[in-house]
Length: 420
Image (tube, rainbow, N blue to C red; front, side, top):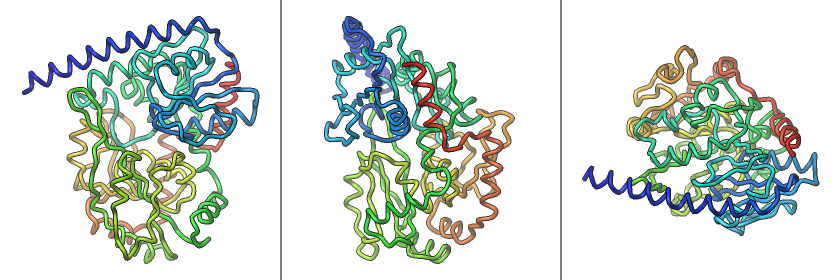
C-alpha cells in the first residue's frame, strides 16, 4: 500500500515536471513580443478568484493614481464581474504565457502554475492571501507538505521580487512557510485598508443592499478552506459543522442586544452543500455570501466574527470586532497540518501562547477565546468582556509589531508605479 502510494506520487511528479517543461517552452516562445511597461497582469487564487483580496485594492488605487496603466486579470470563469478598466482573460496556458510575458508587472495572491517563467526586467509582487495565521503552511507542516507542493512553491518564490507582510510574525514565518528569503514590504495588507477606522458607511450600505434594518447586527461565520491531497493531487473536501446557528443568534442577542443575523461564508466549492441548510425558525436570519468575490468589504460590514482556523480572525481583530474561535476538531486538524502556529489544544481553557518551536522567544498570547462545543461557545459569549478584550488586542498588536494604518494600498501603488 505504502509502496504503491509512493510510486503514484513519483509518477504524478514526473508527469507534472514534463508538463512544466511544456509550460516553459510556451513562455519562451512568447518572448518574441516586447514587454509593455504600462501593462499589469493580475490573478487571485489560481484563477478561481475574482475582483477581491489584496490585488483588488492595489489595482483600484493604481487606476485611481495612474489611469493610463492597463490591467488584465486571469479568471477560470469568464462570467466574473470586473470594473471596465480591467480586461478579463482566460486562465489558460497560452493566455498566461502571452499576457504574463508581455506585462511589466505581475500581481498575485497565490502561486503561479509550475513552469511559469519570468523575463528579465519584469516585476513580480506577491501579496499572499494571509499574513498572521493559525494553521501552519509550507515546510512548517513537516510531512504534510508534499514534494509537489514544494516544487510549485519554490518555482514561484524564486520569481518573486517583493512579498507583502504586516508583522514580525511574517518575518519569521515566511522563509520556511513560503520558501521565500527575498525582500519583504512591511506595508500591511491592502485588503485590510477597508477595515481601518470608522466602518459605519460600509455597514449601512451592506444592510441596505440586503434589505435589513439599518440597526441590524451581523455576525460572520467563515470556517477555513479545507484542502487535502491524495497521491500528490489536491482536492477540496466537504465537511459538516456542528455549530448551532439558532442558539448562536439567541446568545448574541442576549449578550450584545439588538436583532442579529448570521452571514455565512464557506469556500465557494462547498457553497452548494450549504444551500441545503434548512431551519425554518431562523432561515430569514441567514445570509449566504459564499460566492462573493470580495471577502473584506463583506467583513467590514460585520459586527462580530466566528471561525475555526481562518487567518481572517486576526484581521477582524484589527477592526476591533468581537472574535470567537469555534473548532470542534482541533486534534484532528492539528495532526493533519503537522502543527499549528499557536499551542491550541482541545482542552485549551486558559491563555494560549504562540508556538515556541516556530517562534522562539516571542511572548505572545492568542487574543481570542476558543470553544470546541456549543456549550463552551455559549459560555464564552456570555463572559465576553469588551474592556479586557481591547487590552488583549492592544498588547497583541504591539508585540506583533503590526502594521495596520489604512494606507497599504496607496503605498504599494506608489512602489508599483515606480517600476512601470
